[in-house]
Every structure is written in structure tokens, then in C-alpha cells.
Image (cartoon, rainbow, N blue to C red; front, side, top):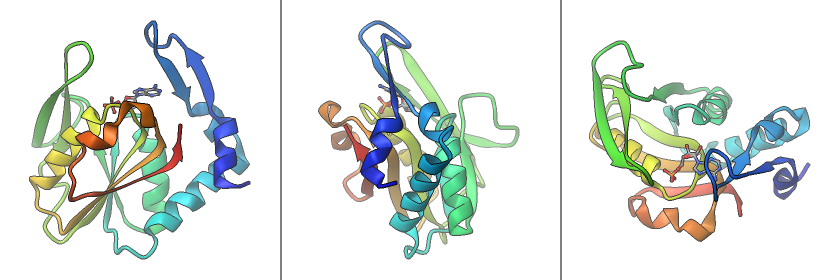
Length: 174
Ligand code: AMP
């Protein structure tokens, strides 16, 4: 399967989770073995020669591709979680959502200054979630941060809200 063909395996769910949103449902991609394999290989190829030491996956859909990528690269996986879920000492960042505020947390010892990090989530919409996660990772002073998505919704210009000093890549653009 070609990377571009992965688009046909993603299901659009209209008015989920609220009216006016077209939700890109990746469960139909990951339940298809050939598509999951194509996605995994494509993610690996993006970062194979970059010296990555940790993949940070954003709860919860970012845990799927993030874990696969970490496994493929032979590096560590770090979960960026919703508030109150991580058991040890954390650092946290709140950010504005369409309605209200959300918070994301990382264990304070998750990243160090020798790390080369890929921050991964399933989808880039406005970029608010990733910008907050990136600020947390940056505060731990890793050598380099890459940002990665499976899907990017280009019309929302989420890239404009991400730090300019981080290389951003997405497998599929809609
Ligand atoms: P944002 O912070 O606006 O970039 O939103 C990104 C987060 O919300 C990701 O974790 C996505 O899983 C989720 N998300 C936002 N919009 C959609 C959408 N249209 N379809 C699927 N997931 C979405």
C-alpha cells in the first residue's frame, strides 16, 4: 500500500464529538493490518537516521503511533497525559481549547538534555495541544525536538501555532 492510499482507510464521522466537527477516525486505519504496517514503516522512515532517543506520545490517540514509532526506532516512549493520571512528580501546561481550558502533564524526569525527541500525535488541528506539549518538552532542554502527526488538517493552519525551531512533519494532509 502507498502512503497516500492510507487516506482511503480513514473514516470521516460528521458532527462528532460536537456539531460542525468532521472527526477523522483513525480506528479504521489501524484495524487494517496492511494500512497499519504502511503507517508504521512510513513513520520509521521519517526518523530512522535522526538519532532519536525518545518518542513522546500525546494522550490518548498519540499513544498508538507513538509507541509503534518508538518500537521501530528502538528508543524510549514517554506518555504526555491528561491531568492527574501520572503517578510521580510532574510538570504541566494549560492551554486554551475551543471551549474552556485543558492541561497536559509529563513526568518531570521523562526527558533530559541528551535526548533527541519526537513529539507525536495522531492529528494536527489548531495546534494548541501540540504547542503546549512542546513547551513542556522544551523546558527539559533536550538536544532537539521533532514534531510529527499522522494527519494534518491544513485548512486550520495549526503549523502556524507550533514553534518555528522544531521540524514538523505529517504523513497525510487533508
Ligand atoms: P488541536 O489542539 O486543535 O490541534 O487538536 C488536536 C487534538 O484533538 C488531537 O489530539 C486530535 O486527536 C484531536 N482532534 C482535533 N480535531 C480533530 C478531528 N477533526 N478529528 C480527529 N481528531 C481531532
